[in-house]
Amino acid sequence: MTESPSDPLAIALFSEIDTLEQLVQSRLQRALPKGMELSQFSVLNHFARLGGEKTPAQLARAFHVTRGTMTNTLKKLEASGWVHIRPDWDDGRRKWVTISPAGRAARDYAVQCITPLFEDVIEGLGRERIRTALPFLRDLRKHLDR
Image (tube, rainbow, N blue to C red; front, side):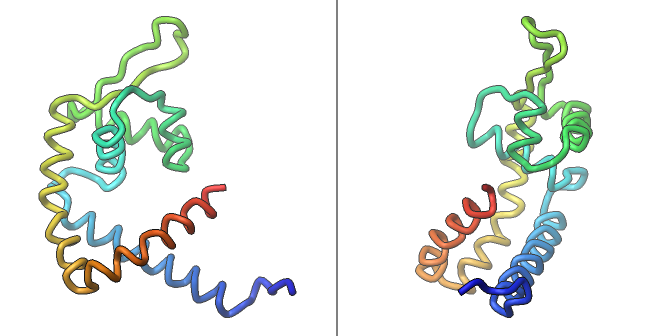
């Protein structure tokens, strides 16, 4: 049986996701160091976790944003000294981005700033409950990322 677009379960699921996104983004932005935007932290965290170099186009795809949006974020990160952007020596139209030592330090400091927020959530909900929910959340992300 095909469920209609107005299925109450679907509406409830996406309403909760939307509300969670707004709450998490608001709390994270308030906890981040002064002058660091959530989009900047996300890019720094991406590099700190995965390392390497990426093109702005690769980053835009990874974050599901336009190239223009990513370019704007990267310009701010470069102006703060948190990323290095270099030309591609083989293709003059392309650039490569990597985190700088200052960017890694800024990311690490931001993680210290937001850790109490996450510790509070883990404490409030319980570690086992969160461990149980993580596989579902990963599956949901993969499903939505198709």
